[in-house]
Image 1 (spheres, rainbow, N blue to C red):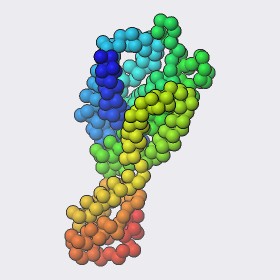
Image 2: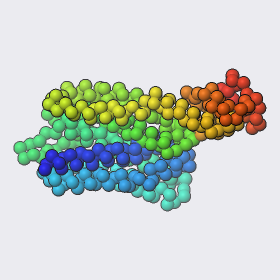
Image 3: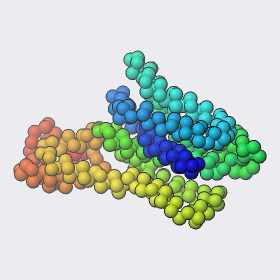
Length: 333
């Protein structure tokens, strides 16, 4: 029976990370992808209908842990008392920043809550990573099954461990990058225009950091906690979890982003006339009208099947014949 309850708690925490992870990631990159008030409202609207429901999974996991494993609940909450209080306040501040933002129209009010929303989401991503690292690294239990750790000591691994050391900080950075990519992909899927473009760029940039840190953390974890490697040898089916983690990283890779954008160009090219090309370009980067890795010849050929004549927009908005070598010149203007 204990195994069943353990699996249920693990499933609830996994679902929480998957669902509320993009909420936290969207908040962490909030000020990076949204430069104006309208763009920030757009990011908040992308998570508005779901962020409260997603946090129910964390409450359910905590309640299940309390009833199924009361000794573990008591030991964990007493040993991690300070960071848990910090996490609780961050969750509260994050919630009220979303709710209070639109209550008053002011040049000071909105930026204050936007900053608080971004900072609380970022710190939550870091502290959740540190919590996972402490579980993997282990905590110093006494004879009664309880422990206490300060927030930090000398940032080294040894007998006097703290909640924050170089290993937990490393995993915290990995957690932040992973959730940032998760949130960037979500915002990219739910928005358009410059917010969509910046989110795609952040997703690609964070992907490289995740790839490098995942490889480094895996090697370091096997050295710090040999029991992890032994568990994989004892239960080979456990390799499914690293494989799922690798599969989760794949959608944010530059290759996947390039294929996604190419497919978008194909779909747009099938239904847009050449004189509407500028609308497709402006949706991605209105400031310059330039898209990275844009396959303009592909879009051009698809549009010719639809329209026939070779038309494009002149700078003053009039249709005119277009030569293939003019495409990138006009788009870059």
